Image 1 (cartoon, rainbow, N blue to C red):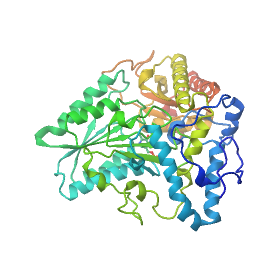
Image 2 (image 1 turned 180 degrees about the vertical axis):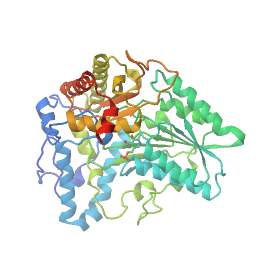
Image 3 (image 1 turned 90 degrees about the vertical axis):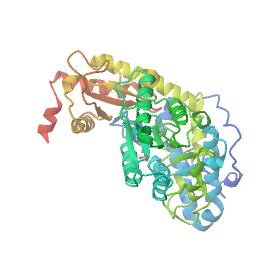
Length: 465
Ligand SMILES: Cc1ncc(COP(=O)(O)O)c(C=O)c1O
């Protein structure tokens, strides 16, 4: 059988060693002596629309051409002889990807790793067993589930669908923004747990983001998990949709029961792929109740195996993980080097923008990742979520800049929330990924400066519609 193309070879070569002979190494491959060049990086991402300054890797991620070519190889392999692919190839290839992920995140056992479509699916898996525990009487009506106020919208809906509807009491942890220290987050979290435990209730689950989406903040997830253990919370689910490729992950050290990260955001996989790590331990007595929400032939064979077949579909995005590791190892320092440089660059770009606009960052550098929040000039008068969306669209359509905008409800208290005029109510979430160039951020800076100098404000956009 043909082997997948190498990530530095855009055309499937089709005739070297057998796929079955590719085994995940015990340790990740050593790094090359000659790192990938700027020209090669540009060619890997040449399919990006050149008219757009894409400073929003966070929303949809990115996938290099060489990995798309590996994905296409697998799609063709399947179509060439589907029965052979299904009976002989699919499960071992998914196992290989799971083994690599296990090493990357320091898990104990490959059986703890399931590959699913995305973090939304992972959340459904975790929350479904919570709903069953309410329905089957293991949990009592009114038992609590705690989540961050800044939990991702889709995950909040999932909590509504699976927990609130089954009789659970949902508590939101209010978080300050701009935020200056982990201590502010820890204080709010402790007080939400106290509320959850009031009147003899039990807190059955805490849903904690590793990196919140909007506003983007790095959460002290290890410390919050430890507090959950101390306070007798039954289960901890870490929604780390943005984590792999963006921050270091050590699931043993974090100690949560469930931990999910998308592979298609910061880890260069094509859409859609994510892993869900489920710790095998006594603190997770419901692990046998974990099932993929799409039930198929493998039902009852453990979540990892159930997830390898959820009906006929394209599984190719799940098979490219070994090739992604080869791709990231073409960069100096591998994935660690990419992470470090992206972080340093996004902080530098964030400071450059804040200085030009006379605003501030929404988080200190140590609470940001490869994304950072930058205050927008108050003269833009962003006064609702709708304004934030309209400004984003205007930046895309009129200036060729793709960047998400966050509207922050004005509060009296808070630090560093003013620019030279009044209160900052809008923040841009800028990302930095390997394909970005300084010019992308200059384009954004100049667009905002032009809007300000022209006396633009968001009310004008409303009247344009
Ligand atoms: C924190 C968080 N959780 C979950 C998701 C959902 O990811 P997906 O749409 O890939 O399922 C996102 C997406 O941005 C996110 O930021």
